[in-house]
Length: 455
Image 1: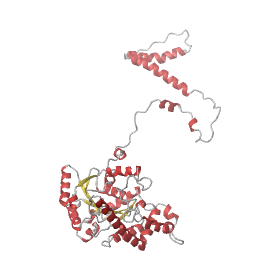
Image 2: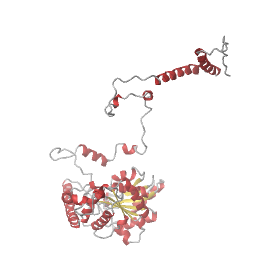
Image 3: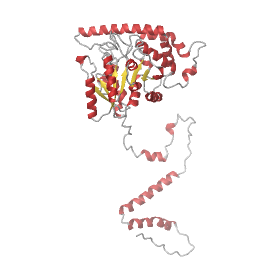
């Protein structure tokens, strides 16, 4: 129960209350509240709090003193001289409550990569081999980059750079064609040129429809976007081993799709077996993992062997039976150097009675045309929903307009392209023979290769 003290009778009814009386009317009732609840601790804290607020009130209403040296009108040179506000001062003494957090998705991406592939790449960057400056350095053998025909690319670019990007006098190109916004999924002219090139490197065995092409900045976003379109977080793709280490990054990092290895034996030159594929699929289902597709490389990366026509048909039968997708990475289709026949997945579905809309092809110009820095990646899909979604997702990874104009001119130069393909095949074959011979002299065996930059 709250008690209040009655005021002392005044000598005159007209006398106004003094400051002391007013103060008692403020503090004494508070003491009564505290004492009435038996709160000895609160009775000590409340006066302290009132004293603190009184000091804060006086500090904020203290008249400011004129600054004898007014600051310059230039804000950038006197930022350090600005007075800190009282609220800023009161906050600075509170201290941090802990390290600011980032999303859980970024933690596995930011941590050091434990893959031997990326560890090797880091070692090369730290200690690169040089025949004169660093003869004991590390030789790069892990990056599939075709430098054998850089001289051909350099010569063409030097001769055609300006005309390709800005056009010749009286041409249709202008600064607006390269500086303004352009379609994110690629110029129609480039799609037509790429479709023709894809058919050319496959010996015209199958035509490619430009309307089924989506272009983006390299094969890495191609793999990621297809993963995003075909599988949900926690779903999986079956992938024959050994496989390109970059798939672990491209497929998993942002989409959350898993990879299930399908182990192939070295005694069979790592040839894919449908029986082993069936076993991997069944084991995944027993673990409660939903398999949404098969991811293959043809020609193989990193073996360089080819998938036979019979095996491709078996894969399509398997995918149709399980109602899953097939992603065929054919980025080395034009880098053949052996006598074996390369068969594209597109050729099979065009000629045989298979459901097309579950087939998706990965391609790019980094390997077959030796321009990895240009970042030209290709999705070729028979699925209209995938194409529609991929076109919108390319907003995150479009190819620059100047690059597209340059590559259009290069691909339309049919004489140069044919010369390049012929010379490139001969140089890859020559380098393969030299390297395999050197390994054999050292007593090192290697897998049989017919394509790519592998042995």
